[in-house]
Every structure is written in C-alpha cells, then in structure tokens.
Length: 433
Image 1 (cartoon, rainbow, N blue to C red):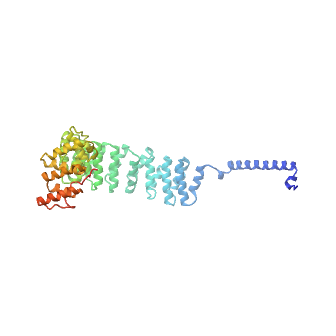
Image 2: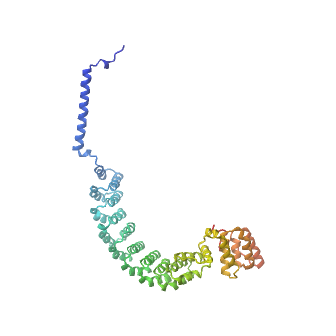
Image 3: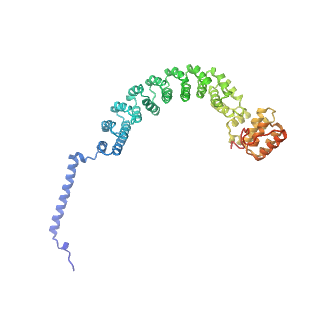
C-alpha cells in the first residue's frame, strides 16, 4: 500500500492550521469594513462616483457623466453641473444644461439664463429654463426682451412644448409680433392664442398685414379661436386683399353676418385654393343663409368636395333621400352609395331624365366615378341623347373601353374632334372605389 505524505500529517497539526486560516479570514473582513468606513475613495455612492467622472476623463466620459446625473435627479449634482456649463467641450456643456433641466433646482435659473447666450447651450438651456416653470418665468420674460433674436427662437417653441399659458407673457409676446424674424412672429402669435388673453386681440389684428403668409395664416387662426368680434374688420381685409385662408375659417367661427357675402363671393371666385376655406367658413357660421349658399352649389361638380366639407362643418343633416345621395356624392362615399344602391340609382337616373344640364352632368360623372359595370349601357344612352363635348371627352379618357368607343362614335357623328388623353376629364372610371 502506498501512503501519501498528506496521510502522515498529525491530526493536531491539521486542527491548528484550520484555526489559523479562520483567524486570517476574520481579519481580512474586519480590515475591509474599516477601509469602507474610513477611506472616502472607496465609497459606493453612485452620485459621488458619477460626479468624479464629471470632473475628469475624456469629453465623452464627462458628457456621459452629465447625462447620468440628469437621470439621477440628485440635488447634490446641481453645483457641479452648473460648473460644467463652462466645460471647454460644447457637447459636455450642452449635456449639463439638459441635466439641470431634469434635476429642476431653482439654483440653476441664473446660470441657465447665461447659457442662453452661448449657441452651443442655447436650445437646451431654453428648454431647461421653461421647464422649471413659475420660478423661472420672470427670467424667461427678461430673456424674451434680449435683442438677440436667436434667444427668442430658442425659447418660444418650448413655451408651446410645456403648454405655458401665464398671462404675464402677453406683453413680451406682443412685442415679439414686431420681430425681424418671421419664425419668432409666428411662434409669438401661437403662444398668444394659447394664453387667450383678449389684450392681444388688437395687436394680432394689426399683424394680419404681416409680410409673411405663414404668419398671417397663424394670426388669423388664433383670432378665430379667441372669438372677439373686434377682429372681424381686419379679417375681412385679410380675406379680400391677402387671400388668407385661415381668415375665412376665422370669420366663420366668429359668426358675424358681415362675413356672409364676402365668403360667398370667395366660394365662387377665381382663386381655387380659397374655395375650400370659404366653404368651411360658411359652414362654421351655422347660419341658415350660409347653408343655403352651400346647398345652392351641391350639384356643382367642381365644388362638390368643398361644399361637402362646408356642410360637414355646419353639422348639416339631410332631410330627404335626394339630399342624402347628394351629400354622399359630395363626399365621394362609394361605400354608402353602394349600400343604398337602389336609392342612389333612383335619384341619379331621375336627374338624368330632368333635361337640366347641371343635374344630368352631376349624375353622369357620379356614375362614372362609382364604376358600376351594369350602368354602362345607361351611360351610353345618356351620351347619345343628352351628350356634349365635355361629357364625351370624359368618356373617352375615363379608362373604360366601351365608353371610349361610344365617345369616339358620338364625336364622329357630331363632327367633333374629341381630344384623347390631354382633353377634358371630369373623373375616371371607378375613381371612388
């Protein structure tokens, strides 16, 4: 038998060795505990560790530390983050501004106001300041008086972002309506509308003559929302002379009857882009006379969509089967027209027999737009009996072969040179499907 050296050890020696090992382990544990208490460098406090990273390391490491401190939201980080606003690396300074906004401590207000003057930190400092709320409002107001337009460009969007509605902002925002920068003027009008203070009505009415169309549109929208009739005259001028679309809607919201005739004239005017807003303005008036103006054009194929939108704005409800079909046609609502197919065909085919050209054309163009194949023979018959060049050109170019041939035959018979492809086309086959 082979005896190992280990088996020759005495039991007494093994016991002493075990006791010595246990004592050594206890000593190491005690030493570690004392070191944790007495040595600051060994602290496990994550804020302190991150603050150390803010003061040293590469720019990327300092920036990461600033971002992490913002997430921690610990008040101990405020003063070091304020100091980091002066970091030589712009990205670190910007991260410090963002972090101060998240920590939300009023000690940061003055340093953030100073950071507005630096392009690298301006946007983040503006967001942080506005986000601080009421304690920083006076500082924000003072900053809006700064002649540097870039500071206003940074602050104003954040007033919207944070939904700030404090009436103390009215006067500085009114001054911003005269800024040299169109974006600032636009944002100021938007903020004034959000606040809703009627002191702003007259300055906004004057701003309806702004050189920038986007500013005029925003000002008109705001005046419509504010609901003060002092704006009507200026809005009428903006509608007639400056073709301001939002002026039409604003006049409708204000509901002053002086706007009825100008809106009706705009609906029938040459500016196609203004017809829709005028129709909506008429609808928003909720005046029976304005609805009559819209209903008078319900069979006008060119105006059908804007008329439908205007009637929707008026929350108008059809009272007859015919009115219901006409409204669905205005909306291009193929699904509803198909569900009520018998009703649809009855109304449209009665119009075909009316000997009234607008009604016939409206019915024909609606049937072509629906693209119901079984109506092709009827459409060919209508062309033969009541057709005209515009209808024939629509058939020729609508994309349906039988109607194309029918149009060609009709043109040859009437000695009309009907224009293919580039000619008139009021709709195409199945356009609403």
